[in-house]
Image (cartoon, rainbow, N blue to C red; front, top):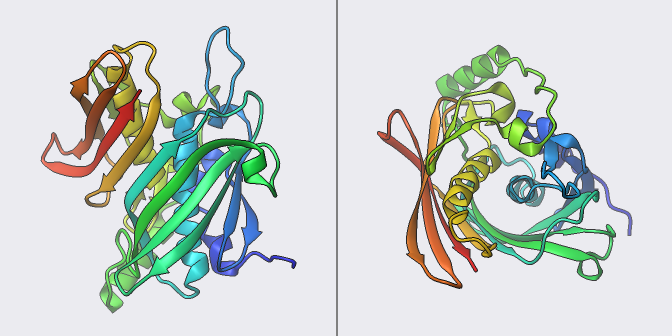
Length: 285
């Protein structure tokens, strides 16, 4: 059976952040969609003495985007959506020099939200389970609304004006995903300044959910570095409110640390901590 790209699905892949990251739509139908993240400097790690591979934070961003695209594909005519919760179980690591593929499908929908499952892998496109698995996705999205997408004619005019004023700026030439994400570490915190290529929804505008997840993962990794030998095994991001395109701080703390396991939490805040936008819980083992 041939598969075609749904127009609304194609439209949902065109966001400044996904364009900067280099994500590509591979088509799909209302049951399942597919994306590819090509191996390139903007998506890869930069590890001295090691072969570069696609960064796990880039994989998380791709899967978050795939989840939203799956909701749009399953509900033609949907006006908006946004991630409520993102959960990833990590199964392996990206293979050096290889692209990452992602697949996602909406498995349950009601009037308030949609549940999406998916996966990411390296290797063959058509047989993910026969390739190198990287992560499994389970996420929930709000249905019919998104950042800056309130109902009413006045809100519609504001969205149109904001979109018209938002001129996408080409992302900088970078050597790694870390450079594309930007920001700087300050102790166990990670500070991320605003930039137009980090936008997901231009209606508000708001940071892409994948950017928020990547920032939280970065803060957690700063703390996890104090436990050598442990690797990230799972993570859950809860999106409390839209992350405006402004200075955002990501800070992590240790919930429990042992010789073989560490539980970490992190939060993303804006406006000097007055605006809490997302939280992360993750397991290193």
